Image (cartoon, rainbow, N blue to C red; front, side, top):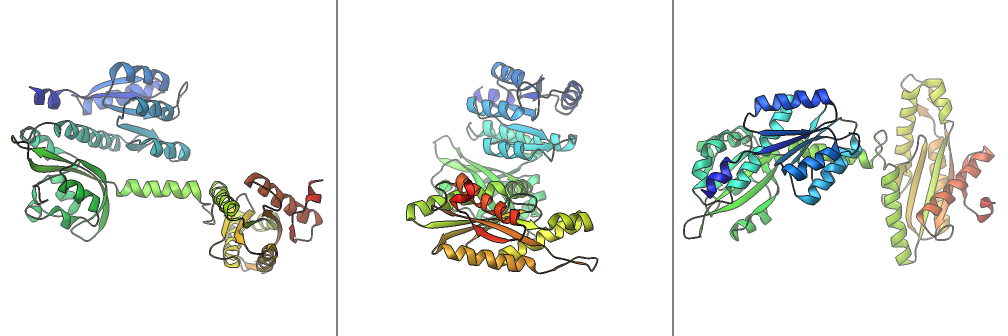
Length: 431
């Protein structure tokens, strides 16, 4: 009777969307596609929280930007109450919200405008994982009751004996890996993976394990997979099998890497963006403080860049920025850090400088590098210059904010003279 309740109790879905037409359309669409799914809706994050507390749904699908309460804040509160699978619908450009989603453990994303097939697949994957999670808490006989559902599952299902020898794979496994059922049966699961020592230690100890592994297809193509493995016990309480639920997360990991790239790097030059550069500067200042060392910060503004944009267009300007970034990197040590913090403003971190005068030599090297002409695709040559201000920790400032201000102040003094070049910060500039 317990097993019947576990496998047959219907799942409940809460859909949160502020646009009434979209909400009604999607609910109707889901009702037709998933007739056994109990679907409820809410018009914003605040009402969504009320319905979640009331209904305790198995799955939540939510928009991000809504009045009263954003979907991200609602999801954060839901996760604080109870770990629940959440599918977010979001636009490509909503980078900050997507990064927040990753941090709080959102399970799946569907881009707007909503592609119904992708939404269906995300819900099917989530329901399959929920279904198996329920089933794995029961005794071995649950496997027989789940056999039909497992065959139709959009997730890879693999059943192995206590030594890891495969006894069953579902059609999704054969479609993903390229191995037929006959080729997989009798093989050790380890032969399909490229990593996973923690995974195998957990199996040896008869433990539940969840994580990510690297695997390989029959074609030799590597891919990433999330995997959840649970032991199944016989009537004597001994482990008789392990059931593994596997999902190809290669695209998801690529998306995460892309988001991290967007969050930390300037997309035009490939240099650190302002946020990442300041993080690096903060760490360097903390280390220098502990080790009683100096850190030099160069704040650089390109001279004549506006004229390049005005005379040759923004594509030429972008080329100049990329060439300038390349010359900056070649002018400093590998251990130094270069960032682009504004349109034509760059910062260079010289960590653990032995002598303050070394920063001046680096600045001079950069000025000379940037003075060299840059050839444009149309055959024209442009010349730019650089105005560089140098601030030194702890001589000029005792924290990151003041150090940035000192270097910026020295740079503007160079700009004021109109001659380009470089200058160290001095306290007289504050006046």
